[in-house]
Length: 455
Image (cartoon, rainbow, N blue to C red; front, side, top):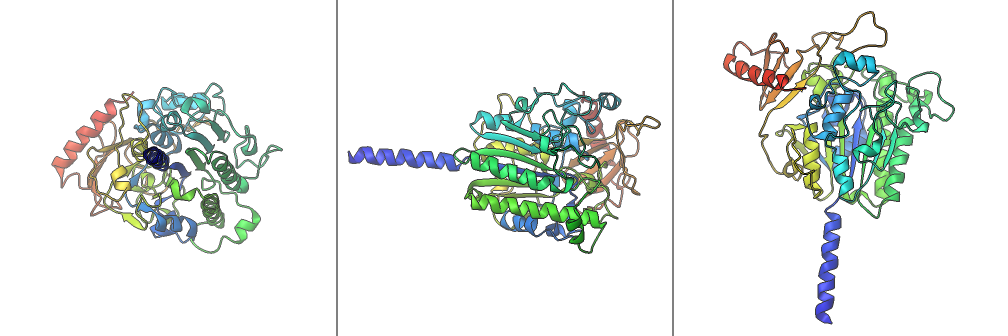
């Protein structure tokens, strides 16, 4: 009998260990949040104490790159672990006519890899809450439902196959005329946080995954009168400062809610921006980095990343050495949570789980980007195939490669090659294409060969 009790106790201990090794996953993606928007990164003069607290409790990365300087392909990179152009998503998804102008798909192919689908197959309850923008809305009425990508629950905005009524079934959030059941623009983040906490509570007996993709920091900024009054002084407009402070407040309320539910100890929280800011307010929102949204310069693709998992991710760590990417999320999360990736999965990203645990791991292959295949359309109302920055010195060549300290940008026709040493010159002020001709030639060949391999 004693032996049987020991065996049973060991079995229960093993079950508990297995359960704790599958953390809940909370991925907070903030629309258009610049590298310098966070106080923890130097700040644009707007207090962000709750997100700064998250950084103190976890690890922040100084070299994190999104997969694109615009929303739809950026989100594709997070979901698939692959460069978004592989799936013919190269600009923001819009009307069918606009998508044709970009030479892109109308929605993310459900045959594409999805880390959400992998986690669902491993027993996770899964939810998407907030901005989707990977297909659906406008006149694209045949986009796959959220379930096709692995979600049990989908509460999207109007740019999704299944918009939540509270967020507006057909209305953009900034329109003056709202639907009767629609919450005000300034109240959307509060509602999304409430839904996230409700989902976490409902599924607290099993591991869960929530993609909470917020959109208040996307222009036009529409705070409430009360939020505007408390915006304070600082960089940019009062409207910008108000919505950033409110986003920070609601993220703090979310973190406090997880603590109250006693779920924060085994929840892996990831906070990132989907692309650079627009406007940059004279580069204050990029902390001096050149570029902004719609640009392949650093300000358009380098965004904040904070990761917190108590007892696993070192608290208060600032990782300045690792080049991390959105396409790393899929293999890294699978490794951290002991979730098997799909059979035969081929990722453009790398497993950085050792880095998240506090170790070191140099990147083994370069990162690539493409943005801007056509000029902005003129005289065709409603069609903007590829928006470009209007701020000085921010419009970049349309292909880029990052290999260690070297970043090269070049147009797809081989013109305008620019080479930067990001260790010595993170603000990309000195083009070394002539001074380092051999490096420039090698990286140009790699970038253009990659570009030619795309659909």
